[in-house]
Image (tube, rainbow, N blue to C red):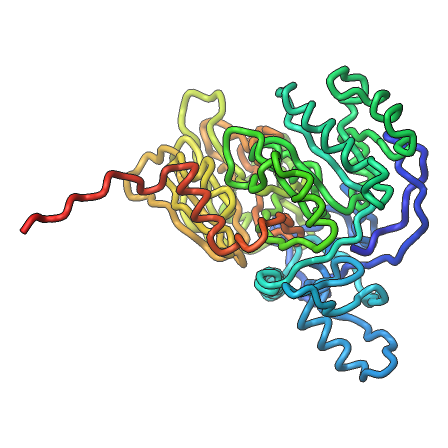
Length: 501
């Protein structure tokens, strides 16, 4: 994976001073006509830097397809157009090389550069065509990864340990000790959570004492450090259950390195590897490459109503959320402003929170008002999240390769509101009408619980940053069905007896 410029040793955790490497600039061509419609307003004014994080430099391998516009590199012995076609055919852009299942090098993409004349845009600003093209390109790349191994050039390994379970700390120590050993042949930099630095069960000082070469290579991270240095890491190892994987997705709000998850929790939809075989698993992953599944994530934007306390506005005209979001807009008037953008792997849920009465929620798809929902809440889930809150609320199970958005009401006030499945090219909006009796509350992957006042809403669309989940060797096709059979005992019952003749 082409990495961005290495950070200095200063700062939390002492990020290393490796030599600078090639950089990739990711762009989406903003050739759309002017559109606002509230959910499409920019987080910042045109020409100004983004508030959340500048992502004009990224190592995300999926963007070699998403970007679309590439400058052909000089190529001795091959026509430039043939070279470009080879990149589009193999389209990995992941690291130094990509290898197929026979271990043969397919293409080298170190010297590729995207054009630098475009500007970075957020997915909530994309036109319908741009969102469709982006989703289609992600699916195209995901299909190519079915039969291809990605050979990694790993230097910085990020380790996430299950919180609240001290028994997992000993396993974290084992993995760190094995990776830091000089027998590995590569001087890996290992990043573990800062809370383990002084933990006696982890024994950081003893690790360095036992392996002197580990001095300076055993480093520690906190949330702030990850947000500022997400592009530094080449590979992620999680030790825990599905909740640990969700926490990892939350940490990496933009680029997600390949995530290999060992099963040390109570569920196993996302954790596919047995920790008892960790040495062989990691050895093969670093030496021979990994198969990766790209899990769809959602980009969610919290939109706040402007002028809620403006007395002249409220007395002059009664505001209507449906009209503001899909009706005619007044030139130069912004009815809403974005407050925060988050990337989620499982689901976004709007519910009544501590309010004693049910929620009133307006549901929109693109520029169409779908319905007004009276219920305890509504769950908008990814295919990955179909086995979580969505399933508990009566929604459908959905294979993670399906490019869809699942909408499930939570205790709806009408029996006719059935779960629906929508394509990932739709931009959903869920809002609290101005005349609602109470506010609603939004949570994202069970985190960041935020109150939505009348007039506020949340935008949900397919994210440009899918979750790169490492798969067991040769287990992609049967992996998901095996998970639901094992974890849910799906359709498990005693076999019917045959009729006797």
